Image (cartoon, rainbow, N blue to C red; front, side):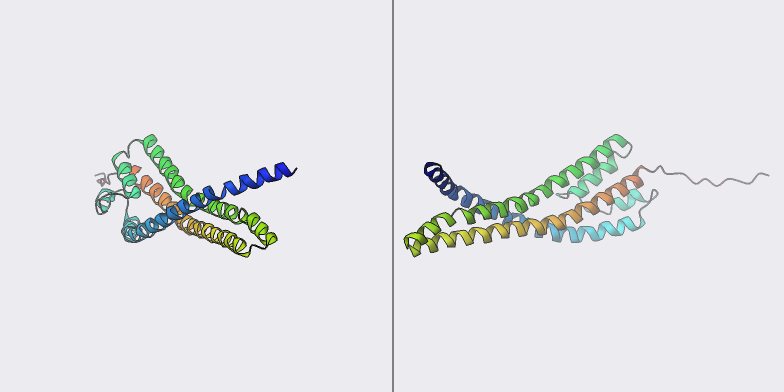
Length: 207
């Protein structure tokens, strides 16, 4: 039994370095995600105002004119999708596939935030529990400095893991609202674009 316990102890201690390295990598990725999120946030504020104004009065008669008032697609997935919908409006199967793929891409983007939410606390907990063993050993041996160092590592990994999870939660909640609204707008615009224009020819009265 002692051999098994020692084996588990050494395996646990050997995992500390990979856990800390992964925590640092996830922390850097979370910081990059947060920076990109704020940049995207300001871009969406400008675009959403124009988009909302167009949605308010677009119809089957002025749709082409109103869509031309949008800015170039650039790096905006929403505008790129809308441009393809406008160009291929007569192909219903293609447009439905395009909307489905947009939803899949949105889920993929949200998956990054979900990964931070799950793995951040998980790695933080592992980084907390692993140093507790050496800390207790140091306490039993009267080595206060060793115990203090291991406890410092344990608390630091917990904090970093929670920061990673917090970034994931904030970005996930906001992006879910973004993509839900965009899907509703794209489905509405697709209906407007696919509606045939009925020419209103006045009927002359019968003489």
